[in-house]
Amino acid sequence: MEHRHLVLAYVITILGQLAYAGWVGLKYRETRKLEREFPPYPAQPK
Amino acid sequence: MKIFRWIWLAFTVGLLGYAFYQGMYVAPTEATMGDIQRIFYYHFPSAMMTFLFFFISFIASIVYLASRRSHPQRALNADAAALAAAEMGMVFCTLVLIQGPLWARPVWGIWWTWDARLTSTLVLWLIYASYLLLRKFADGPQMQTVAAVLAVFGYVDVPIVYFSTRWWRTQHPAPVIGGDSNSGLDPSMWVAVLWNLAAWLAWGLLIAGWRYSIERRRQVAEQHAALHALEASLEVTL
Image (cartoon, rainbow over the protein chains, first blue to last red):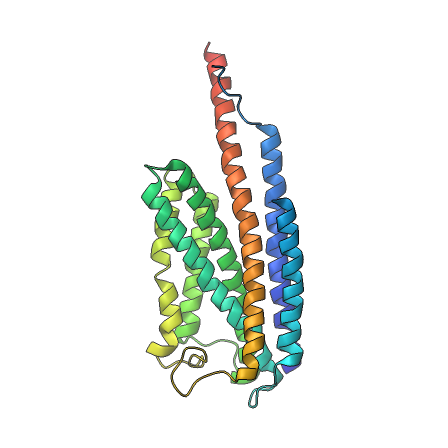
């Protein structure tokens, strides 16, 4: 049981961190889409 | 900036690999618990990163509250930092709450007990879960202010978690690092602890930094969206 728990804890740690990094990646794609949809508003000519 | 992030990623992956090797193969086997004690090499750094990232969120929330009227741009930066750090802290805190029971079951014979350390850590998790839920589902100009206030008050639980094993008798062991004269870690174990701390710190800063930059870009894009919407409404009016 000891080794199983040790390995399981490490696998969950790595998978948990990778899952969050993947979710951040999805947020990145979502933000890129928003940026393409709404490009910088043109400044007023002086 | 992008190349710097890729270099940091490569460095972090190397560091995590070496830290794993140190914790699993180089550090000596603990005398009473055996190999299961090696969970310590990522349980302890995860707990320290929880404290660190919630502290960053706490400071950023104070900066947001202090500057939201006088320096709006600084406040937006601080708000993005508070969110990114709270999310990263939440990931580490969740992992601590999973690793702990997996270590406790073979050593204590139970998965969970309602002692001060475990309960206060669960309360900490619930506080920051409510912070993130508030940020996701609440809307309107006051949302960021309310979230910042919650992050500041919520942080009060962090010292309670840290000192819980000193203040109360707990099932959770007394502090091994920074504890009394009878506590301590074998010097041969310190190397693995430090490598794992450095590796998870590098990982946490990498991902939280990335999340921060995305949140800043999202804030700017939403400002542009608001300007486009204003322009469209003016065209309709004219």
